[in-house]
Image (cartoon, rainbow, N blue to C red; front, side, top):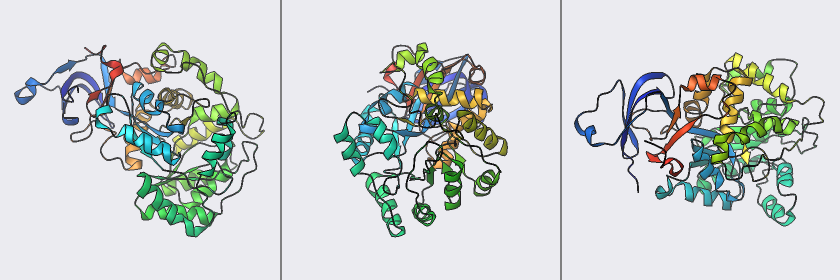
Length: 431
């Protein structure tokens, strides 16, 4: 097993909050022991291996706040790490996949290969609600597997089931947060059963009773408003129609609700997915790191819906950003056929949030690191600070300039460490 102790120096450091020039970071036994501007190597640190990287940027390990590791797809851990994503947050999965992915991610001997894994367990959903439509599309060629997966979905149809469901996700699956589905179907041309507001409120209250946040899914203004009225802490998507008032923004600000826009996901639903997918998957860095190098399929659920568009989803995010709503990065990567690829999806989201939405690079970086850690209660990661996990990503160049450059599709990742252990994909290139 390689050493998890080293020094990296002479770098531009983004520590999750601010930038520091010519910084030095000391890692001992997988933890950050010192962060020093213009540091000198002396005393006990003199025996550690030294990596000097002037002209490079060191940032916290990226966190993908929204994935689905369907069928225990190991790429959600292995491929994510190759792209600099040291933690993935599963937002709904089946029990078998959750157990397998947790076991792989938590094996300390595999930190050179896999990202860490957080989960919501299984999302709270009434019978026939989302994610059934997306599962039907993902498994359209395997009716038996589809039936098995759908049969395992939790059907939370009464208020009395709310606390039991939340307890099961936390106690059985180790859920770090709870997700609830509230898909109206009105922007994706579907008619779906509508969860009662009192049921959604009960799920949120049950989550808060156990000390975790509750986040909710909806693709339309009507669904979002019900989630906000239910008291959720975060939205797992922007939405596809344009509201006539700003009541939703006022409610988000009042309740301190964050949003994970999943812009690339919205594009795949609206028929714009290939415009994003093809350039990113064709990028040389992506071609080197992807296991399956082909663009994924688009769902096109909302392509023919008159009130839904990718432009609407983007404008809603612009409005949130202008209003000061916390925005976090999450890809909604899922499955083997649909959406965007694990790991690369985070690069896509960061690009879209910077170049298309117009966010400042520092805010996008926070949204992919420290802000997620703060919102989800991950107190041991998301920053380059003393005592935290040495989850680190080394980038060639100044990350502020890289993110602001529309020609830079993928961040130029040169090394990734999880708990101070170098990702095996970079063992031959780091000097």
